Image 1 (spheres, rainbow, N blue to C red):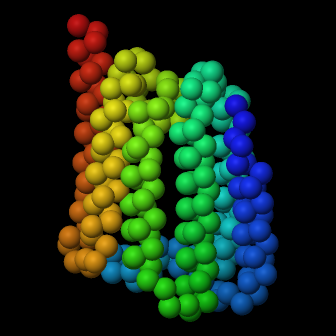
Image 2 (image 1 turned 180 degrees about the horizontal axis):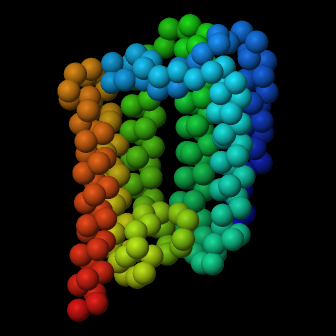
Length: 211
């Protein structure tokens, strides 16, 4: 399976990394790599880490291009080609955005971290949820539990419910953008509950199928 936009993404990742090299000399010895719910940096890494996260979008793109070729169920990628292409675009572009958020904050640009991150993640979850039902049985892409991998029927039903869960989570990220108190934690809490719930759901489906 070929991803039509791979060349455009490849150029984007290379340009981003070259731009990182260009500003590298101006970076402080430590750069922010994590932010709290109030948008303030709460974890830092050494300056060379900027090169690693700068190269990560390129590495992820290559990985996304290789996975369909080595998946034993590679024929599934033809059936969910659009969903895989959209996901590849989202992952690469979002990694570039997060990379440059860290770079710009390290260079002391005044940007609203909380707003950008929640907006990006919220939109990402909504888009992924919309395409979730298109994903066919495979070993690398989608909601992989022991029970979805063991049964195509469990896979299909789990991804249908998972799609709604992704979209709800995306909506929660967007509506909690104005908050910097405990309400800002709602999307993170929902994510944990959703992960546990979807594992349990796929297990229950599998047990019912085997009866």
